Length: 355
Ligand code: PMP
Image (cartoon, rainbow, N blue to C red; front, side, top):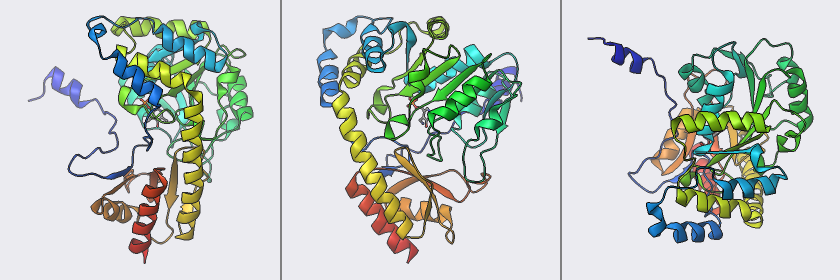
C-alpha cells in the first residue's frame, strides 16, 4: 500500500557511491582516494585531540581551519566556509543559491551528485553537452536563463581541466548568478579559480581534503568566495547543525592544510605515477583522456569495459565502471592512480586479460 511517506522516500534517487567491499583486501582504484597516508602532522594532531577534550563541543566557527585555509589562499577568514566533506558544501550551495527558480546549468557528463541535489531541491537540470572530445565549451555557457552554473574543474569522470581564462569567460557571461567551481581534483594539475575570488562576487570555489590531502576518512570540504556568499552558507549550515566538523576532524584538517610541503610531495608522486600509468595503458591499446586529476578515464576500442571491470574485480582490483547504459561513457573505466606498485599490478593484470 502506498502512503505519503513511502511515496516520498520512493521519489528520492540518491547517489550511489563507489563500492567499498569488505570481503577481502582489494587494490582500490575506484573511489579516487589517495594511496598515501595523510600528513604525519595531521595524524599527530588528531591523536592528540583524542583526549578528555572530546567531552566539549567543537569550535562552532572552525576558526583554526578557516585561518589555515585563508592563509594558504591569501584570503580572509570571512571568505572561507568549512563543511562535512565537499558534498555537504555542495548540498548547502544548491539549497541556498540554486533552488526555487530557474534551471541549473552543468555539464551532461560530470559528477553525478549534482543531479541528486537538483532532484532533492526540485531544481531542473539544464544539461550542457561536452563536445566530442569530452571538453566543456565556455561559449555554450553564454546567454543562459538559469539559476546558477556548476563547473567541475578538472571535470570528473573525464579528468580534463579548463584553463582559468575559460572559467573567467563563464563568470563574465553569468554575472547575475552564482558560478560554483567544484575543484575536488585541482591540486593534481589544474589552475584554481581561488585567485579570482576577490574579483568575482558570484564565484564560489569548492574544494575537499578527501583527495590531494588524503583525508577522505574525516569528511572535510570547504568553499572560498565573497563574504556575502560565505555568510549565506553559514546561515544555512547553522539552521541544520551549527558545528561544522568534529574536534578530531578540525585538528587533523588544520594540521593537514598547514603542511603544504607534504601536500606537494604526495601530489608530485601521484602525478608521476599517473604519467607512467598513462603510458602503460596506451601501450596496452587503451585510449586515455588527458588527465589533470588523480584518476584516468579510459576505453579500449576492441574490449568491453564491463568485462574488464568484472575480471579485474575477480582478481582483487577495483576500478570504477559507471554502467553500460550510460550514454557516451558506457564503455569507459575510471581508474584511480594508486601507488607505483598497485599500478604495476594493474598493468600486469590487464596485460593478461587482453592477451
Ligand atoms: N566533487 C567531485 C567532483 C567529486 O568527485 C567528489 C568525490 N566523489 C566530491 C565533490 C565530494 O568529495 P567529498 O565529499 O569527499 O569532499
